[in-house]
Image 1 (tube, one colour):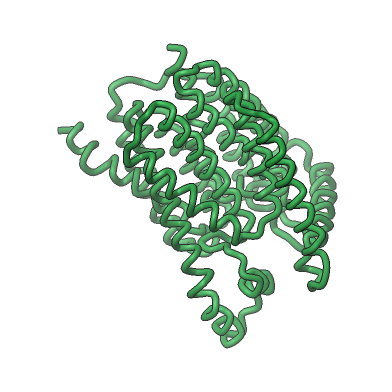
Image 2: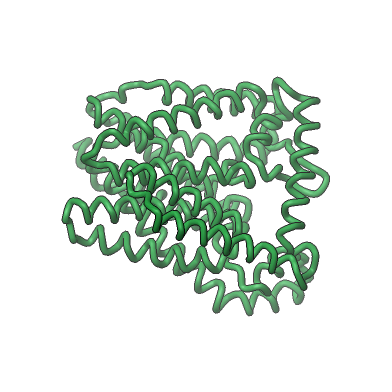
Length: 398
């Protein structure tokens, strides 16, 4: 009876959460975000409770729990404000998602990955619809209702895709992770000579994601994609002069785009403005760390003169969550890379393992210049990838 409930109700609810997660921006849909998180946590508890065997704990699991403890301490420091409690709920849901993926068997992990891919297809279609159909209406709606959001207006006027995310850069990071995951799946299926629906849907997902990534016009996203494709090719031992020439050309094109976009536009739309602002945010964040080096400012209490984020998750984790938070996060990053490299020695699934590793690296690298770690909508895919990476290591060397 318990297994029947698990299969027919609980597991579909979990997959539904994974599917809908990238569509729900927590800061824009606070109540909806709260509802889906509570439903997911309840379903996940039932799922984990009904498992036939426990997860074999690893160092990664210990590090994840320690990070959650650091976040809870940070929330206590923040004096239990409503906004901070909502943020804490987000982190609890992400760690829960990590353990759901860790507890899943091989077949269920495949279903999780397939759900991520299907969801990404719809995210891409949704973003294209918003860009080409809804954006014109939004430009009329904002001024008519006295809503001032210059960055959103700039995104729309310059034809930059960003919906359903807060910004084109956050959408770009999500798409880069999806593209690399699809590359790993596609190359693995081709190698294994499996011409099935998974190969077809992965190809469609990669194609749609690539198109939307183009319309994000995110230089950071394209740069991270270029670096990660380079790492992916090295990982699968496919790097040669032809690929080097293509990647070098991509870097030259990105450099040219950066130069061209710095000419003939309003200053705040230029890439140089973004770079200048980020450097200023980082300096301010370092000053905050100097004032609160141990405990941080408390969850949700981080704020700069002109921004609520540092646009560098590593600095903001230290400033907001404290020394325990940043130390544990760096340990998680180190363990992810170490485990991912070890997984590459398992040649039977080399391409798939390389896709998992480089998708995680995309998140790790992009958070040097952005803040998706602090948005459940942007970081949920990282926690799935982290769990898959750890589970692959257990499967490969059991």
